[in-house]
Length: 294
Image (cartoon, rainbow, N blue to C red; front, side):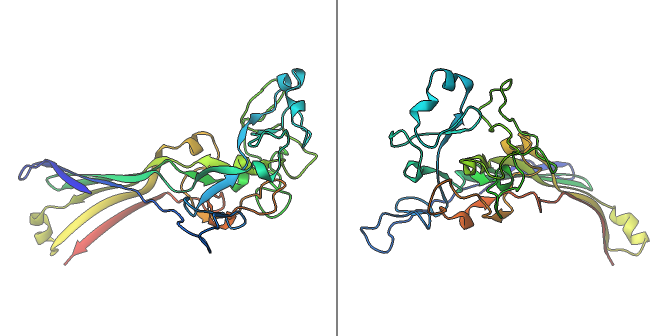
């Protein structure tokens, strides 16, 4: 943390800034025995943080051209069609199964930081707090479904207040989301859709106040009086998650709730995954107040 005094004038304009930068690094150095290098069921891997993403790697959506040139036929299992999620065949055996899962990243930010600017001029004061969390993934359970208690029950079925996302169609050959399918309540390899860029820069608070003159206060029998207006979480400056329309706030507000990888016997520690849910997003608050001292 560094504090700078940018402008300082007696009975004039003053400006100071707090610069904050920090990061945390962790990794598992040993499991139950030195020979044990991983525990896939618990999502633990030696040399990796506790909050890794261990899942299939989505490389896009199967396209019509993949069917024409028979590229899709090279994957013998499971049999897939244009418009479905395409997964990287990590071991190159021509089929997608639990052995193709890999470490995709983790929920640990690359860095976090803050910037607080304080201004004052005579009786007026203003402070603006900016906060950033960059280079991390978050889990968005509502961007997938498993037909059970995890995810969003009707995702990809175009009903029940469905999110507007970039679905694949024959006229919109996107690589973002698979084609809508009202015939199923779960998605093949749908867990891969839940991992989103959780980086953000947001204004944490703005506080503006005015200290009434002491000469006026003495006439009113007061020691001091300050009028202020405070805004908490007034706006988001940068967030790929918000820009894509996936939610109103990118900051994690829970843990777990993710969909288990398709065809996997273990779930890869979903309870530790930082999730952004739609049930209780961060609030935006505006407060007007008056501080009096007698």
